[in-house]
Length: 67
Image (cartoon, rainbow, N blue to C red):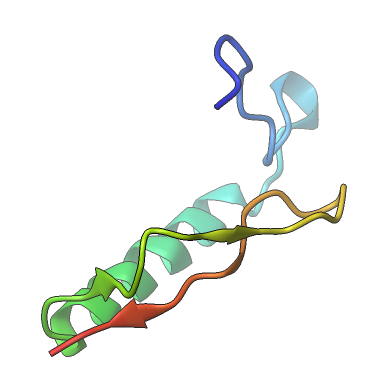
């Protein structure tokens, strides 16, 4: 929801994180394994609680139903 802002989680240029590929690989494996094991995941309702902490931007709670 912030247009025009580049993502800098792994840094940029000479300060780019050497472990970024491992982090991306772990993410890809985890999401693939989740989708293979959990049948038809859906949000339980349309309300997503967002974190209010300045150091973590994302959902605080994300209720999911499956089956």
